[in-house]
Amino acid sequence: MKFIIEFLCIILISMIFVSIDLNNYNGKCIINLENPQKIYAFFIIIIHHIIGTIANIGWIFYSKVILIIFIIIVIIVSIHWMLNGNKCFITQRLNKFCYLPDDHRFPDFFYIIGLKYYDFWNNWACYLFYFFALIYAVYKIFIL
Image 1 (spheres, rainbow, N blue to C red):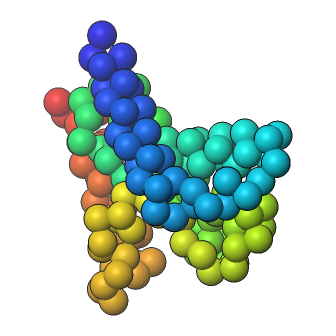
Image 2: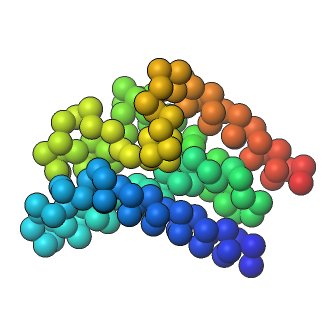
């Protein structure tokens, strides 16, 4: 039961970020697309926000399933970023699909709350955050 409630919280938070994204960042892109492309772009944005929400706040939950999913996503995403020049394939795909510049950022949790506007919040600060969040998630899985 705990997993279902926490998963629904992740979906709700993700949909809030999708709404903010569509109202402030990528909404114009979707409006200008044809119907099948709109559905595809909207689907990409939803999946991207769900992955981003789990990666950014998954460590706060207590369900072992959510914590394991968090650990897997953070490890895969971190390795992917390191191998892809600190760029996300999903963001690159959406930017190309919407004819946006390659450096157009995905409005994730840290971007929306404003942390990515500061110089101290660079790629290494993000990796450091994920490192400590991973340690805490592992602690919660095995100790709590």
